[in-house]
Length: 287
Image 1 (cartoon, rainbow, N blue to C red):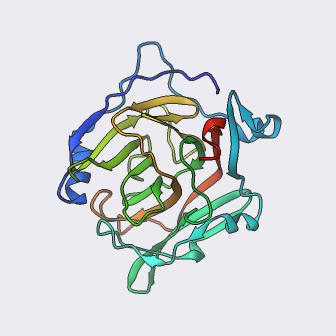
Image 2: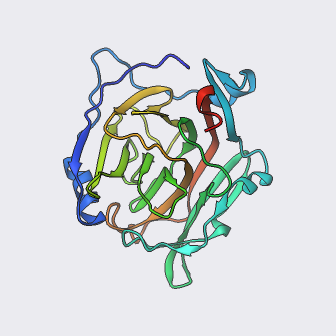
């Protein structure tokens, strides 16, 4: 794998909250920014599109097992576009397939201020449920995120079973804080209590709404490692799910954590995803 510059992280393990609203409050108030080792430079964006054209499908023991470069509209066949009003976290959007399209080599998830099926906003969400799932591997999602109060884009993974836990959040982002993002893992312990481990990355230089960045996860037995532009930003050994999971990408609007959009905010907003790639080590490719 690429050489990784290690950035020390503060891992915070809290007991489960009774509601998701309480969790979001704790996440905002109690989290601390990732601690940076002295002398370690902050991740810098790379032109991974050019690298991809030159490199093979293997990275030091990791083999590419699934990817989408969003070259044309046929890429949408790899995804399920969601079509339902969000009922989570008091969010405001209706997820409409018409808000998802492939354009100019990117997957565009658009968020609009419009009245549609009882909601005042529409947005987009896609998953690989029943199309692609995997157990252990390395995920790279290169994207430029939307800016604005009340926008909540996320890249995450959940199991194909009906229960929503465990869940791995590769990237949680608030549009009003363009230089920050969260990394989270949720699970239930043996007593059925919800648990989580997470970190909060704050950049001194980067604006995730201005340029494309590579948000990554290395999922191994007993350990999760989050990366930004190929650099480690957080590691957790508290819980690593041992079940196949699928990919989920969306932009939520409003709700318990980001709050309502500014009524004067200009819409539409868009999240652009350049590529999604999943690598595995050989030992896990047939599991």
